[in-house]
Image 1 (cartoon, rainbow, N blue to C red):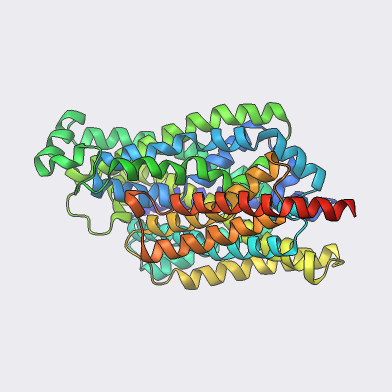
Image 2 (image 1 turned 120 degrees about the horizontal axis):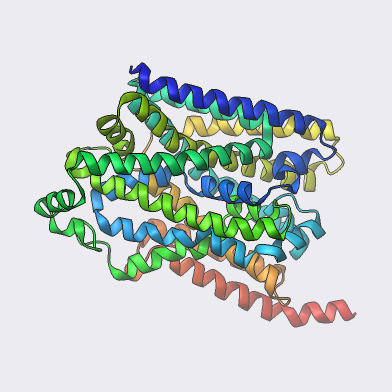
Length: 480
């Protein structure tokens, strides 16, 4: 074990715990536990909103898995990853004021609250809750694995021991502090990510003898590494272009991102977050994926791509600096895990239990159940993560695609199309989930595109057809 590396990481965790305990005081004193615990009282300012979106989206897949794939594929993956720059812009521009206004009108605490009030359908709620629970378990498992691999690489302890340390660390501050703790720690984590990736990129370039020498080494090893098509030429134009739907436009349908659009304080906060978030996402995504590519000539032959970031940091930086820099991917992972935990917990407690099992449950009962469910979910994900895949980025992207296929059109049409109704929403969600699962397993990358494209198009057709075919009937029933 390297104490000079471990000490900065431990100090970072202590600071995170302190923020969680501070936020827990607000949770205990709040008049509305659900709004405070799951939305931070709808009081996020521009910087907090921007950073919580950046930190939530910049996950283990981005910081650990993304550089690992860039290490394998070269500059083609960097180009593909940069399509994520528009994420925050699209989310806040498309949802923006309208979503926040409707969420407040419906008193919605979760995305499913919005869908419930907009479509007035029990089945829309249950299918939405099922989708969140199933797909976000995959996403959470990816984060647990990324955090454990980071701790394993830095400390030298076993993967299982590292997984246990990471799980306990996250569960403590999420359970006690709720969304406010998440937003505050996300801001700290976003700043750490911004500075950490810049330091590591500069150190990697210096260790490689400059950008020109690194590119020359990559070209000598495999000329495809410096082209847009990947090491084996597998990144076709159709695939790279379609990937933009998954990590750009489609992100509007991700529950963990959309919930941010109902938590900000005012319009000024939203506009500031739109600008700051877009700049920060672009800066961080470029830095960390370039690090993955530039690490290849310096550390050839890394077998598990998810270990590229910690290993290159330990190689090119003094130990104590590496400890500080490695707080960046740790920050990214923790910030995503905490958000996903709260989302799944809210789906179980708020969207299923309070809506359909015990609507009159006391506030004290809801508090105890929320904390218990969050803890149980963390333990279950811990068990899922014991046997990890080689590259967790694919696990995370599978979850992204499933959620987008399920939610993108019910969210967008729910805001902007009055004829959209519960029949269209339910048809869209079912077609999106089923088609995505089948295509992912039996016909991935159909027509050279990413798997998510066809399910998103099919769910669009299902929403429009389902709404139009039943719209006249609903009008007649309303008149009668």
